[in-house]
Length: 634
Image 1 (cartoon, rainbow, N blue to C red):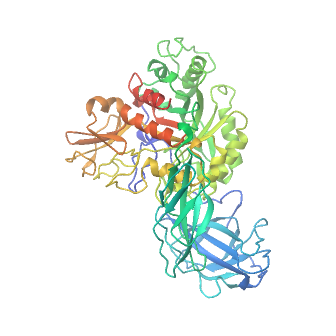
Image 2: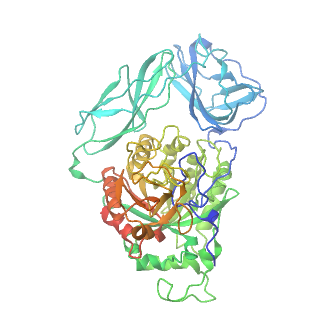
Image 3: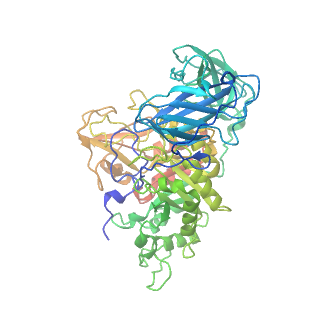
């Protein structure tokens, strides 16, 4: 059978993080724009609802507004209600006006209703009581460019003298660490700005506030040696309005005897694609002949589809119908016409018989097939049930050890834009974990956009982390030939470097941001691409050059397997932990065994769970990249 059309192929990595249009064939994963209610505590926006009268005098409370993020087609807003009186509030109601064309599309932690352009947010049953000095926030997603005006809290002005149109503080500078010992360190940061002045700063460690200070430094003590900590800082103005978070700083205290928190349990995971059995002629048996099967711990089988909010089969022929001859089969035995299960599923069953240590997860979604996740978010329980019924189908239930959800991207834009809300990922993972209980693994492939206000800030990855065994952070495809004119840049930089085209587009920034959201390193896997991305029409050998378009590739422009590039365009240099090469007018970046080894060393230093890669068929016939991951994590 011919190889599927490019639009059905998964991209080699995560979504291109530039604003340019991504290549069609990048990992088979998409999503559909869906206006959905944020589940659990989210409440649909309704029509005209009578407004409740104020429960307390306005002088007893303030309400402040912050625009948390803006992605062009929409935004996330937040109201913070604070009891500034001396008696306990038992309820609160915030009212404001939006200009025509601006509206709330979904909300959480409050009942939000509207009457024309007038909007009202009222507490839920569990968050209406506020003791003196206490505060509570509720959030929402919106559309349009307007700002709120005419704010009232419990019937009175939101701050007593001004409306919340006042600008919140800017983000402070990313903190730096000094005087780092085994148990203490000192943080310093540059000042935030505000139209009425900054009053103080909140310091966060691992997502939890540890101090409020008036200056621009903080000494943190009582730390544990040999442990990684993530810090961020948020500024407050004179009316206690908070601004966006600073960038995150990750610091590992010295000592601890070099103990690796993940020692002995490192994940070494590879993706196996169902379409690889066609034009690529890559089969499960190749995992054995290359030696890779003995060096990995997990396989993600890609992909199952997500249609109409349900898990469905991706490619029935490749998955469970294709007949294998004896020379193609893992155990050297040919399939028969009447056996109940054939195809990749049967070959994976045979692989597990020979390598019982390998865990196999069925991955759903991907770049092309993420469109159904938005609808799934509207009914997480039904989605989880459909996935469970498919993965646990009696014909192949013994093959799979769990499920991987590859949603690109919740409440953000991938091939298309999703609008299901910031809580949608958390709700979906919670329902999936509840259904796949017991010994099943539940994992997710996630964005590596470490920029401020980027994809990792659009959804509750921190809240969802409690329901997953680990995240596969797609730390590749940061830059590529979809930006046809360049500048040339490594597609999988480990760190930032002078001249990098986009701040936050590197592995270190992504891991630091995720740790800053309270996600431990033991739940994060670093992503490695077994391929390169390249440009043509390039005259400059070092990164940062101009180009005329994507370089020619075997299957599509701008992409080539490592096994091809190793011979056709050998590495001529490295930058930010990744190799690059210029051959004629073509310029490529890719990982080699040497750069993989350095990335695995960094993975251990960061206390990460392990590493994963996309995908097996890009490696050499002797599996040298898979071997580099294996030896690097030992």
